[in-house]
Length: 209
Image (cartoon, rainbow, N blue to C red; front, side):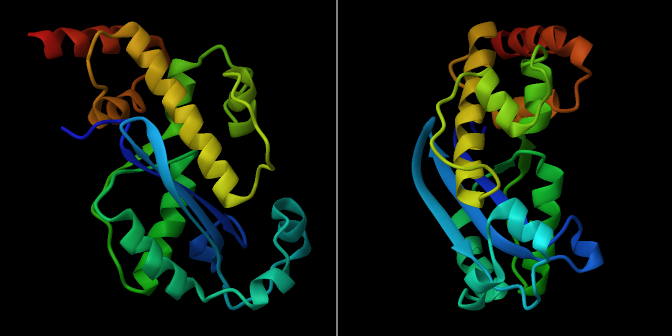
């Protein structure tokens, strides 16, 4: 059974909110976690074939000039498909990043076999006392040191990876399992917050049966 502490954490910066409306990826950042340790990373700007508006430039710090010499999206995403291999995947607000990954892979075309988990949904259930569940707020809440700027893909992926390890650590404090399965986290993400404690106890009981 795949472990929750071995996967690829990814983050996109994009021209807008929806690939269905023609928006494209402009940067991908990712880190690989193996047995709870960050082992390597992937980062690339990519030219979407369109100009980025001033809001996105200001929000991400990625300018049109920076993208002019970047490789096309398809070239970068082919390399990223090779990078992720068969690993499971994680993102903060994963539905957003999954939409862009699916859209960019469909253009190439490439596929991935791993499944997604969401650190935002997991944190809502494990860190219910946090003021909100934005990535930056959760990094402060869990006292993770930072030395970079949010809204750049690699930094956000690194912070999401560190947050993910805090989530797994918090689950370990409630369960005596040697390893936290990836499937446990997936089911946790769709468990009502009021039922989380019961869900974890039931999982523990089944694992020990």
